[in-house]
Image 1 (cartoon, helix red, strand yellow):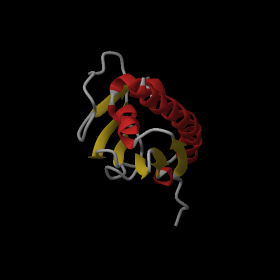
Image 2 (cartoon, rainbow, N blue to C red; image 1 turned 45 degrees about the horizontal axis):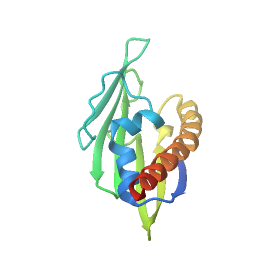
Image 3 (tube, rainbow, N blue to C red; image 1 turned 90 degrees about the horizontal axis):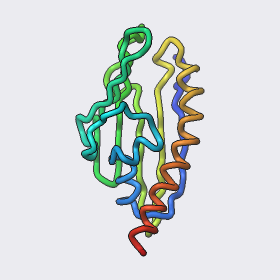
Image 4 (cartoon, one colour; image 1 turned 90 degrees about the vertical axis):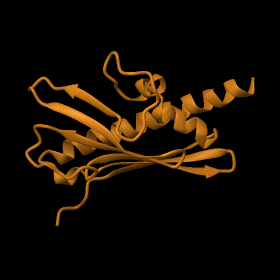
Length: 151
């Protein structure tokens, strides 16, 4: 049995979980910590929302929100059309869990399982970098949103 390749990271954010949730589902904020195609709709994302990228090799990379439990958990399935192995929806996913800590929020991130893919280690390595950068931007955006509401 191959060892699972799941990136795990977390950050404590000095903002209510409602602010963190806003940063996770509002495309205006998502575009600052993750890539979105030009002309992506401005409505908040929810279950079933998709982001589709056309890849240079003719394939597509598609992320689909498969779970959106407001202010608790967001799961986004990742699928790339030219992967040799076709994992089940959600087997390779981004998971964001929010834990309320009396006014601040613990954001836990899990990305993977990349052991299911042929070049899984490459995806894993890229996701370690993505998680460490994204969590800091999410933290900053949510804390700024919090401050704006207090002024």
